Length: 159
Image (tube, rainbow, N blue to C red; front, side):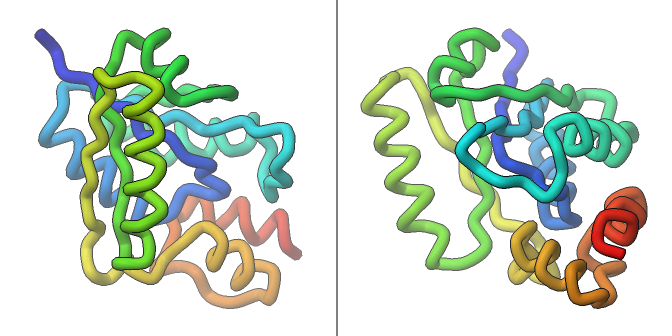
């Protein structure tokens, strides 16, 4: 039976750390669904349409990756996609507590759900979308932290 993993996130924007996790997940799973969360209560720098466009452009070299979006509960999305495994990244010990709480709560909502944690390459441990947006807003060099398509989009967004 093919193994599918869902990698949910805001991806506002996608970073090289995200791409690193996706690349590694492709070696572990048959299909990797990268799904951008659409939360109406959250303010994003990039619209859902822009985030999906960047995801598709950046992830085009990975044939087993699907790009999608969702809103609402992750467990409901998993059921709809007929998947039961979620991918989450851990950059530091500080991520572990939050991710552990989320994984435990999701499993309480749907006991079949499993969460797989991967750590990014060391050079991406300090990269986050929040930091990327902050640095972009001040005109900093992000070429080592985001794919070229994202760098271009950030320059347009924050000029």
